[in-house]
Length: 284
Image (cartoon, rainbow, N blue to C red):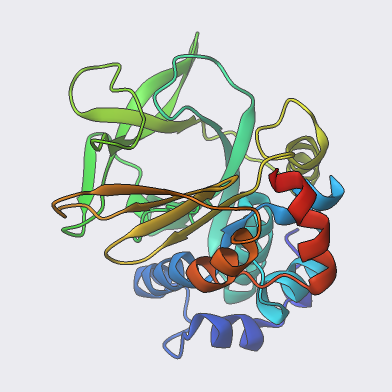
């Protein structure tokens, strides 16, 4: 279903730096998940430039593995699901509604994998950009922290009459997000366990890349998570989050000419000369 037989698995694992076991175990899943999050970049430049983002595996491999580029969650999950399938994992893909503290009902715009191992289910959310560094077991009241990045997973009514799951993150001073519950945490996204298929991802991917109602079709966004900090780019605003630092959130306004260099230096996203010229007018 996910075209695992067409994946260049050796190239993908080499890109991640994964040299360990390839058996479909929890240890392998944890290793792949962490390596993918830290290695494969998140960016939406293709949609901003062309209002189009190919989702066939050949195009995704060429961009995310063969090129110095990243992609959105739909590209990430297309690649990751092919690898899970090739390695023999049992899993399915779900979509979620990104909230970031909002109470509005938004369209499903985020894709994740749920992996089944020994009667347990693990959320492997590798395509958010600032993704958790570990899979999270789908049991109620799960708290996860590596000492720097912390998350909560809770059962919840995700839309009126629909039960599902909510992934929460801490609110940090200066990050511009609202703590609507007043407990220091906000809902990042919600999801149900309704299985999704490549056709569903193609539909959501098309909306995200081309619709004027999508937040990712006109503004450049990029994210890169490191073990101790997170870089994000929103149009020309570069933000760095360092939990526990004296100034945990720092913002810097860039000029249009600075953005391509920042994409390369901070995010590992290198644009061609042609794409740089196409991008500059969109950053005014």
